Image 1 (cartoon, one colour):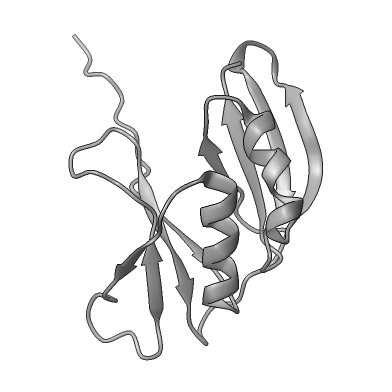
Image 2: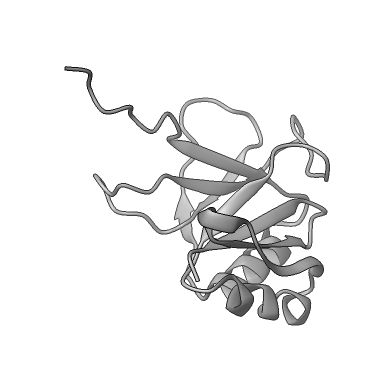
Length: 130
C-alpha cells in the first residue's frame, strides 16, 4: 500500500516595492485583511505582511515581502489564489490599481483561471472550479 502524496507547497512570498500599495491591492481584490508579521531571524530590511491562514489548514499561506534582496516582476513564479469564482476577484483588479491580463477562461477538467498583474508588476492568477 502506497501512501497518499503530500502537497509539497508550504509558503509563498510575493515581493513588492511599495508595501502599502500592495497591501491595499490584495485586500481590495481578495476581500481579506493582511496580518502584520515579524520577519523571522535576522533578515536585514525585510518587511512582511501575511495573508490570513489557520494553523493546520490544508491550504498553504504566504506573505507580501519588501526587501532590497529580491525585486518583484513578471516572468517568474506564478501564484494562483483559490476562489469561488475567478471572475469575481479579477473584476476587482483594475479598481485596485492592477491590470487584467486574461479574463476568466476554462482549463478543462481542472476548472477556470484568470490572470492579472498586481501593483508591483507581479503576474498572479485566480483559480476556481466554476
